[in-house]
Amino acid sequence: MIILAATPIGNLGDASRRLVEALSEATIVAAEDTRTTQRLLAALGISNRPRLIALHDHNEKERAPELVELARDQDVLVLSDAGMPTVSDPGYGLVAAAADAGVLVTVIPGPSAVVTALAVSGLPTDRFTFEGFVARKPGERAAAFRALASEPRTMVFFEAPSRAAATLADMATAFGADRRAAVCRELTKLHEEVARGTLADLAAWAEAGVRGELVIVVEGAAARAVAFPDAVTQVLELVRGGTRLKDAAAEVSGLTGHSSRELYQAALSMRG
Image (tube, rainbow, N blue to C red):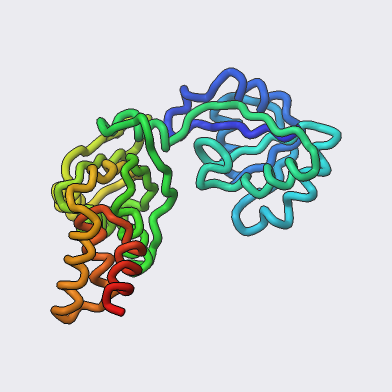
């Protein structure tokens, strides 16, 4: 079978007994970075030296068939660098291929930065959406945030520390400066920190520089206070003032929580 195994996201003490046993008995390990896996084996005091096969974003499509065939006769342990494989890490393609081939897939659960950050954020946890890594290019990032402006669920993002200030500023623009959020840094590590506040406050806080692995948790949109027909009227007023229809719909969407696409189509039909 294929065994997806969660590894510590920072604190080595979070390695489960099942993970240690699996690593001690494994003959084949598909690892996002084989060097990281070698360091994990050494840190856990495991003398077993399984065959290590690199499985990362750039080779998963080619590697998956080979690993599926190997898993027909023996267990293949799958590890990412930290946390649960397949969650913004390699493994999804392999699991899909295994399912198609009728090969059993199971999980050794454990640490996950997504749910850890959600739990300590102080924001609603009953419904949430994981949005993965934030787009690197400013234009793509801003567009993605505009599309999420009306998302009512708590949102969880991964981001690099070097882009934290710019990302939080873009979030404040798209979601509203007063939207609550939390920046979770170095989770489970010695210098763990959770900064909570409005997006405007956090953007200002991040300007001084942020270090370490980051997870950003953002409050979902509040219930719509502006009726849809009134929101369409706002779009048309912006258009009359010289704003492009698409930009006007996006702006009103961010302010009211109504779908940008629906506002665009309604305003377009009224103009026609």
